Image 1 (spheres, rainbow, N blue to C red):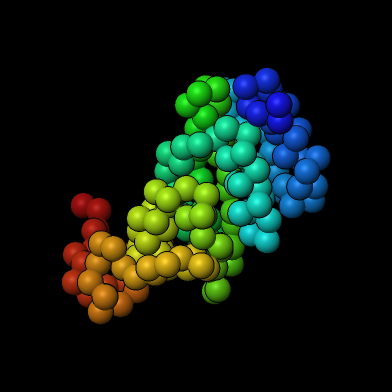
Image 2: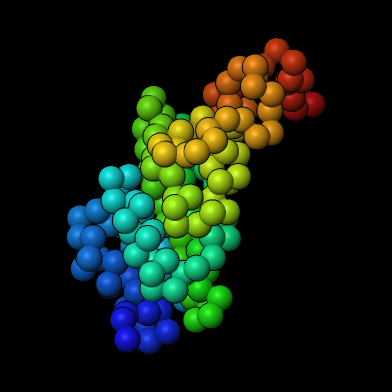
Length: 161
């Protein structure tokens, strides 16, 4: 029988990721039984595929974050092993000026709509996505409204009283 999350603690899963992916794991910890890692974009799909092979069969959420102060965007993958009762969070930081990561649709089909939403609202491109177009906004929409520097003259500015 191969390596699975069934026989591993969260700390052992983290250790396995660090051993297998080395310097590609930029940060890692376990909090509340959840494995949390930040990984380089170059190894993100391989690391996520490895987690899937361990039993993390469910992609709960794929979302994006704008770290405008650091000049980066981030893709956050929240995973679960329903069978083994484990959770993981994988973070991938990318530059704001060329935000590209590889698609994980080959691992989890449900990533299709998640990736399109992150592209639509934050402008992160998913290399290898089979249908890379907007999902919430019209195709002629200009910009990505969840970016912290997004401006649109149609928005009503909030000014405190």
